[in-house]
Image 1 (cartoon, rainbow, N blue to C red):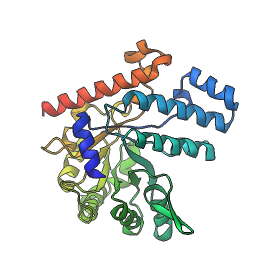
Image 2 (spheres, one colour):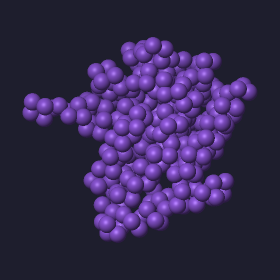
Image 3 (cartoon, one colour):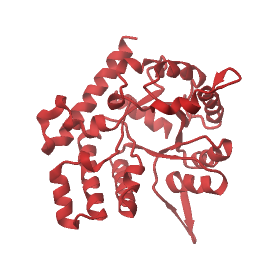
Length: 308
């Protein structure tokens, strides 16, 4: 799957992943009204609104981006109906030939970790048949429990030719409470990065590993170090746009070949119509606003890489 991701990035010239993280206050009123008219102000109505919102954004951006990243918590809050919307979103994105990164941040051990891996990336046996559950292409994984929590995911990735993005240095302000702690003179995030590189050696594509890392755009100097620690790992970079990251902050995450990183933007794209810059589109044309935001982000990153 890493080969498909790289191919799509080259085709679109957009090392961008759109975070499909819907909140009800992002969804325009006309979408909500239509969903509630059909299903009422219920969990099913909310899920329908989310699905229609996602679909319009996907329809307006799928041809200029390589990947999407739905954050499962935004769907889980609406219970089973929300998870149905998550699955519909994943399936629709795959129909559009997008790479789907399931932002699930799972981290457990033994059979529990294996079940998470099977549910999101693999196939589960039911009698004599096998079924894919959520069927994403990549998943995000929390490595806090060590190799016991990660290796079941790696085993499924080897079988299914899918991939992982392992949390190394996250973009949130308090990440340093644990991740920056020094151990034998090195910050913990660097030790985790070394482990990611080691795990990645087991799952190599042509040039890059199937095992990538999550490193926040809000910490560019740390990204510079981690790029050297993990030269063959793709880096998923959250924190662009709404969290403060800019194109110029991203250059250290990329290798000299212009590859090696993919940058996430969530509300900066999916709720672009709420920004003054894109207000001209209005809520009725929120999908067009999202497309314009992707195009601007692509240009911002390209200029930064050309000027480094």
